[in-house]
Length: 299
Image 1: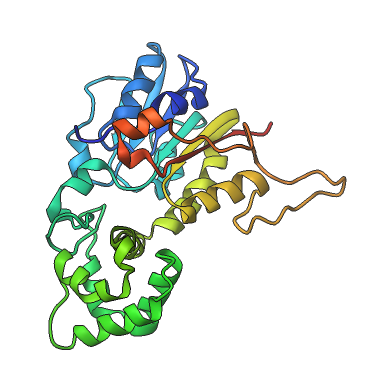
Image 2: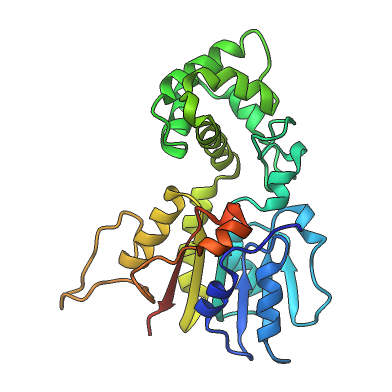
């Protein structure tokens, strides 16, 4: 399977699909969520999907109600306008890395396989993880590992990489792991490597900034009463989503109007986050860290 869609039934329920509505799946991947959305749509319904990974393009459907945009979701508003699809009734974002990307060693996303230190979701982009490790100065590397990897020893890791690269190139998964492994706790090495890789992946793909742009644009493209469903996989993503849905900004500080009403364009459907069941986690371990939030655009 290319990718086992996480929180599938919960996400579809969150969208509250109108059979004649217009919906957007900004992370098409293997098409699992999109397939179920199409099944809920009638003849007049429409689904636009986004994906920047050329591997995902091969999964697109032959359905006249469906259209795949080969681009990053940070360009959501422009492409929807271009295709005459505004406004929309729902936007779904299943963030993170697909199972296919993790399981393809040459993409460099997984710590389980040796391969080039790549990590590009859009393979037409020039900057790879190997280039970041080779070219960023110590201060920039420390920033990445501290803020994107939330690693305590970010400074030491950055210093070590700068030192090692003076005598050998760090251009593969195993070379990176070998260079930093002494800074990880012996009983939590898998988690440590995951944090190191997460930090580099976020930098390569500018993931957090792209998410911010998506959230802001979702307000512009949604019809009043339209729904936004976001599934995130780590605290950095979830914090941005949670703050934006609750306060209308990314700082999480509530702002009120003259009458004391909270200023926010979206209203969470419920305050409690949705997480996978134990049954789903057993079937698909990669769902373990998933958190889903749903909001409605205020009228």
